[in-house]
Length: 203
Image (cartoon, rainbow, N blue to C red; front, side, top):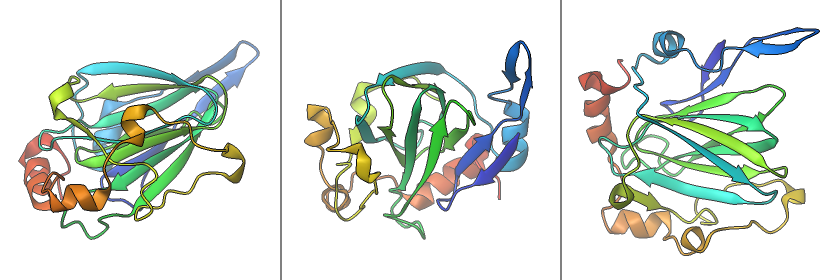
């Protein structure tokens, strides 16, 4: 298993080793000890979610009130898509920036997204199927959205994706600047304290 930190701190790409023979393939999709050894943070799974998306569907940008927020370990089990991590932590050196990882059923790459980061996904194939392991149960009142088409964030989608297919909720989501003005975004200093308390990264 190879784990590397993305351009956004506290987000990681995980590429598993696959063993192939005449029967098929075996791999270890998630290993708590290896993730903690590289990231310096524990990850306790409280819930597992699955989403299935048609080609061209874009989900996000989603985030939860932090702390505690909701860390996510995102894996794709069918098809292909692009996973986006957006730094929305006020005071972060990379605030407003993003990084992305191609997820597909060949490499079986995963992405670990720490609390306080924004997350989005664009389906490149029909029936693109994601599984999310999450650190906190889904709490509707604590879940929020940022417009995935916000020009100030400027996520880049493949030219052949076509017009993104969004839910009404995602299409109506406010911009990053609007949420910043309203004081509704996670704060870098609060999350560093939360991480250092044993709930996340140890510097």
